[in-house]
Image 1 (cartoon, helix red, strand yellow):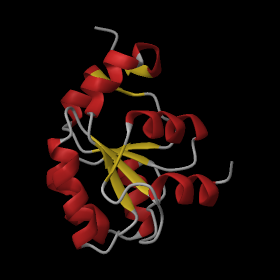
Image 2 (tube, rainbow, N blue to C red; image 1 turned 180 degrees about the vertical axis):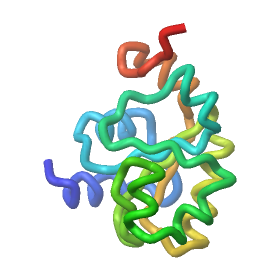
Image 3 (tube, rainbow, N blue to C red; image 1 turned 120 degrees about the vertical axis):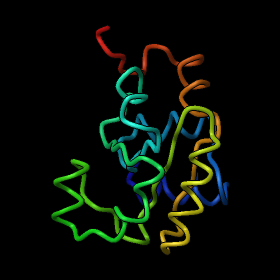
Image 4 (cartoon, rainbow, N blue to C red; image 1 turned 45 degrees about the vertical axis):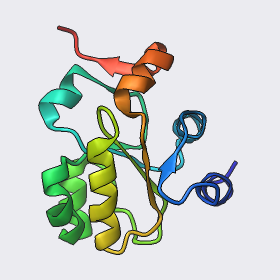
Length: 135
């Protein structure tokens, strides 16, 4: 399934958040960036195993979205999304990703959604689809 098809199918169903099942489909398709808004030390212990993934802490979102493409890529190791690209945010429980969603939308990234269950629910349901630290 192409990104535009996946995007339309899932994003048209949800205005703000995506379900656990849709989040799984997004990750498996590897077509839509997953942005984790937790702090780096939290991400270091466990994170969603997504190929198109970046950690942009909540407090950095506004600054990150004002960066040029090169600076963004150098800092976050993914291409800076265009304002109309689909994006899904995640955090530990859904609270920060919801705040991050507001920040993205305030910067006119209107195709952004968040996964409300967070890594807590993800790990509970898909423990084999996470990356954990060695310690």
